[in-house]
Amino acid sequence: MFGIFKSNPTKKLRKEHQQLLEKGMLAQRKGDIRTYSQLSLEAEELWKKIEKLENTPK
Image 1 (cartoon, one colour):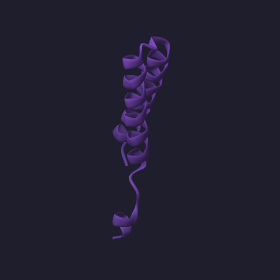
Image 2 (image 1 turned 180 degrees about the horizontal axis):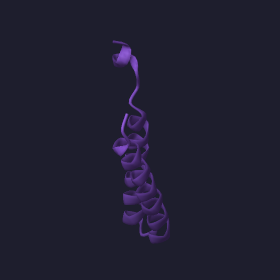
Image 3 (image 1 turned 45 degrees about the vertical axis):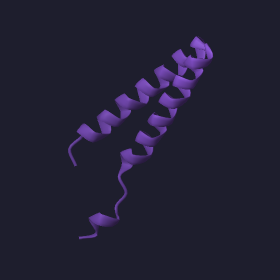
């Protein structure tokens, strides 16, 4: 009944993931490949965490 008031745990993580991808894209456009690689790696690790949370039975 009160499930509608429960927040989605992955919503915040998805927003953070999107921000990392955008920062990485901007770094790549500026020619900063090292920062782009680091941000892409962080985004990939975060995505794995999101998938793990979504695939666990409730």
